[in-house]
Length: 93
Image (cartoon, rainbow, N blue to C red; front, side, top):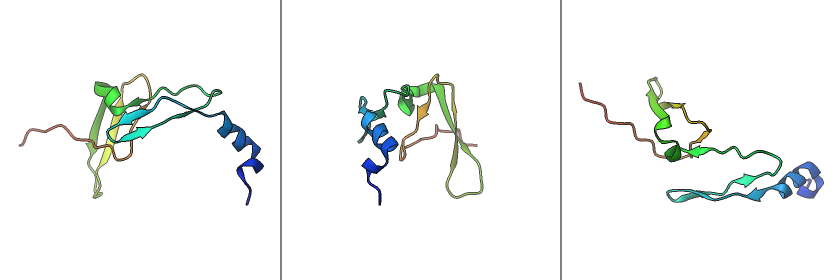
């Protein structure tokens, strides 16, 4: 089985990575790994995107709801796995 040293392009790419500024959301903290040769994607968390994002439930036959996210933000939006999404209250008919 090859080691990391045997796969030189991968070894070089990993050596070039530097930790970015930690991003915290609740009990989760993500430390981005940044490459000096690639631009910073500059993404937003859902909380940072705020009103620029709308999330709607897509009606379907499945047991698990499917969501549609529409973003008017000027940067990509990162949805964290396990992030709680609460739909706004709808008036009862």
